[in-house]
Image (cartoon, rainbow, N blue to C red; front, side, top):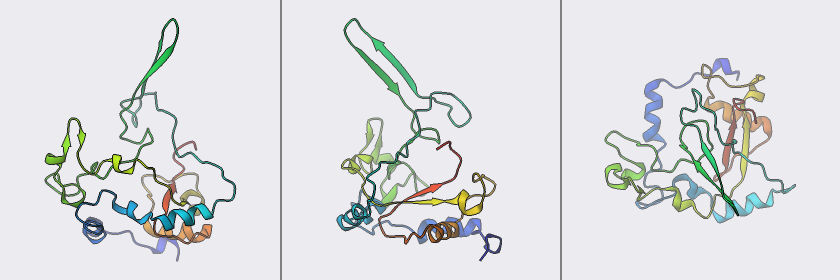
Length: 198
């Protein structure tokens, strides 16, 4: 089916996805991992078995030190030199599109009133010192799984995806099929938009 024959969800349908596809309670009331629970020891072992070249591929942007519309708070980097050594200071406002980061489950309020993933209260768990639940600290052992690349510009035959023509769910299935990828539970999905220089 061509892309022109597919219909994006309405705004109401999209809003209903929050409940329809919710993982709240799926792994218990005290879950700190969300869908990362799908990365089981078996999924990690299966991912390791697919390694052919042993090459690392970084998904990290360089530190964004230039201010701009997409980066109103650029990274601060200061070298500190002494007679016998040097050190540096790095200050980063992570959120936004300019600096690579992982959002914790406590990052987004999922419902009105400051409700976090799993029904936790933001007023109770988000403090000036940090989050007391749903933080990235729970992922400190790392996230190791199979990564799959869905190259949307290649699928469309364009250089990059625009905001006016965003990526649709069916395109992920089409990109997987075009690349010969059989999606698995626990996959880390990387969607190439072509927007960055990498």
